[in-house]
Each structure stands twice: as structure tokens, then as C-alpha cells.
Length: 307
Image 1: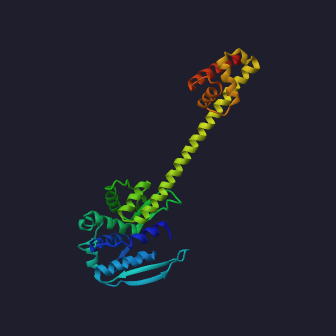
Image 2: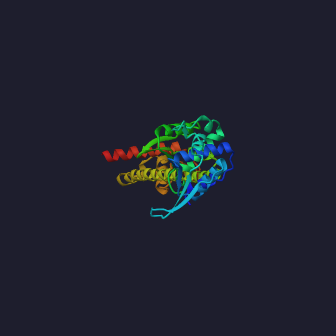
Image 3: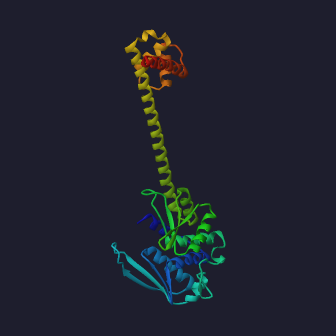
């Protein structure tokens, strides 16, 4: 079962009030039904099919006609069809899908006029047209695919009331409302009460963030090591040039001491080199002191090169 299907399975089993059921069913029928003389709802998800059937029976005390067909796609999935042929106008008016026999894009306020009803509506919308990538296997992405731009703007605005930073893009003849930020996707799942999905999503998100941070630290540490090695090699080249063209004995004793220890410990940083010299000789020398003596060695090497 996909991550999207797992979420839909979870939220289809939430206990709700009749008012919340109306809000949820309003979003579902608006987005995945075909309305003519009857109302037809098609889905390949057996859990969604059963959920919609239960909502209709509980709210309107009718039993829709059920048809199951073998799918025509390569997966050979079954297509589940619910057909409502009773109380059509009553249901469409009640769900704020039609008003005065005219189809409307934006539901009336009574469907979404408090926090719980809006949560139920967004839950129904996700059940109908939502999908989300599994954070374990892919990038962070949640989308809701709707038919109408005005409706897409309405949904995006409602989502963004919770600061979820959703955006809209046209895809073929539909409009996709999407969220890309992992934290915002997690917040959306909380809003629709997909609590188990939130726990899973947060676990994966924290793990991935920790892994990315660890990789960045490792890369940073490796870059620092590479820099230390390159710098030390350059310093040793200067020292060897002085040895070859002249002699380290020409250097002042303190600078000569640093040159000898630099060659002896080519892989260490200047701070580590200062600690080693201090420990082995008993003469305290700071990192800054090491740096200035190395700089004098470099300047002498440059003079030799120029001559």
C-alpha cells in the first residue's frame, strides 16, 4: 500500500459528527463525481469506496447502486462505482454543490464556517484528489489536483490561513495546489487528523535532517583536513627548498625549531603543532606564534626562489 493510500485509510476511519460528514462528503462528491441525472462516484480505492458509501447511507438513508468493474490499465485494478439515483437535488443542495439548480465553485460558509468543519472539508478533499510522496523514498511533496482555478485559489487561501505556504500550478487542464516544505506538509497532515501519518512523517523527516546534517559536517571536516594537508605540504616545500639551497642552520633557533617539527608532523594543524612543541620542549608557543614563524620561513623561501 502506498503512503497516500495509508493516509486515506487512516482518515477514513476517524469518528466525526454529522456536520463534519457533510463537509467531508461535499469535498469528495465535488471533486470525484460525475453529475447528470444521477450522481456517479468512481474510485480504485476500496477503502475510499466503502467510506463514501457509509457517508451517504448515514446522512441520507439511501443505498447507492454499486458496480465493480475490472480496470483497463496495466495494473488490472478494480474500479468501484457508486451511483446515487435518489434525493439528487436534496443531496447536492445540502452539500453546497448546487444552488438553485446551478453548479457552484465555492461551497457555502456553513460547510466550512469553523475550524473542525474546514478540517473535515480538507480531509474529504485529500481523500478525493490528494497525494503525497513517501518521505523515505522521495522528495517532500503534497498535492491536491482540482478542475477549476477559482476553486484552486479558494482552497489554497484556506490552507494558507494556517501558514502552509501552498502554491498553485496549472497541469494540463487541471490546477495543482501543492506544498513542498516538509514541516508544512506535516502540519497539513495534523490538520486533517492523520495522526499516525504525522508520527511516521516526522520520524523520517528528523532522520533525513540528521543524516543531511551529519553529511554536511563530515564534508566540512573533510574539507578542513584537505586544507590542512595542502597548507602543510606547501610549508614543507618551503622548508625543503631552504634545506636544499642553503641550510636550516641559517635560521634563528626558534624558527628552525618550528621547521623541524613541521617536517616531523606534516599532517597536524597549527594548533596541534603548537601543542606538540609545547609538550615536547617545555617551551610554550601559541598557534599565533607558530603562524608567524611559518610566515618567516615562507618569506625566506620566496627570496630564494626569486634569486
